[in-house]
Image 1 (cartoon, protein in one colour):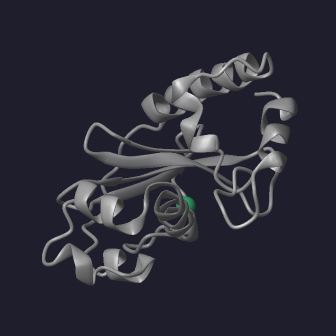
Image 2 (cartoon, protein in one colour):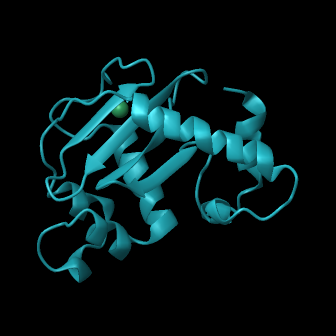
Length: 155
Ligand SMILES: [Zn+2]
């Protein structure tokens, strides 16, 4: 991956999506999934997801090494991913997508969603990561300033 792709994130408005911290987040195939930058190592990213309905979760590096912060509870990457998904889609949409049980209107924070968490479900990071790389290709295209509908989540 190239650093130039990440640089585009610096143009994001403050208070909106933090693309440096979470370069990629999507609601896809019954999963809230995405790529979260390592807090300590700029070269490393984590691939994290929550499954809809079960709210099972997993976090690993893009090389499929399990995240050290994962101990039966969503690590900080998963929590950051959830925060960013809420910033991107709104908490109601995220809660509905994840099929959080109970009254969706009562879900008001990341913690309210995590309260319904499932268990650790080990899955290879490859599929999510390759989708992320595809999006990076869109970023390169975006430099031409032609509108691309899929880029809506950067606005
Ligand atoms: Zn993690």
